[in-house]
Amino acid sequence: MMVTLETRYKKNDTIMYKELADGPALIDPYRRTMTSLNDTALEVWRLLDGERSVLDIINAMRDIFETDEGHLKKDVLDFLKEMLKREMIR
Image 1 (tube, helix red, strand yellow):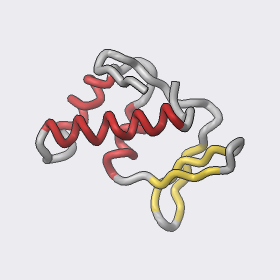
Image 2 (cartoon, one colour; image 1 turned 120 degrees about the horizontal axis):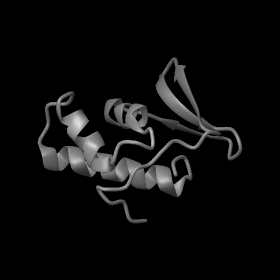
Image 3 (tube, helix red, strand yellow; image 1 turned 90 degrees about the vertical axis):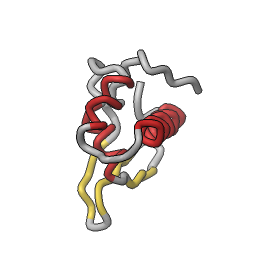
Image 4 (cartoon, one colour; image 1 turned 180 degrees about the horizontal axis):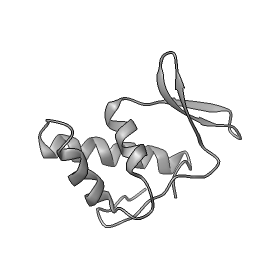
């Protein structure tokens, strides 16, 4: 799956976000799966609104996380690819 910096993704409306004892997670009630979120993934999930491009999300996160841009970009792209594969975003 190809994720480009210009693409604007939004959350699949059927996916539920929950704060669990182990931390934040996404729940897909139809597939009966749960995906735990680390800090980076949680922030990407919060920023997915269908309005921001992937590049906009990376730029917004650069102010939050103190890491090199290459590492941040890879983390964001990897997370989005996984969410697309699981049909959690469109």
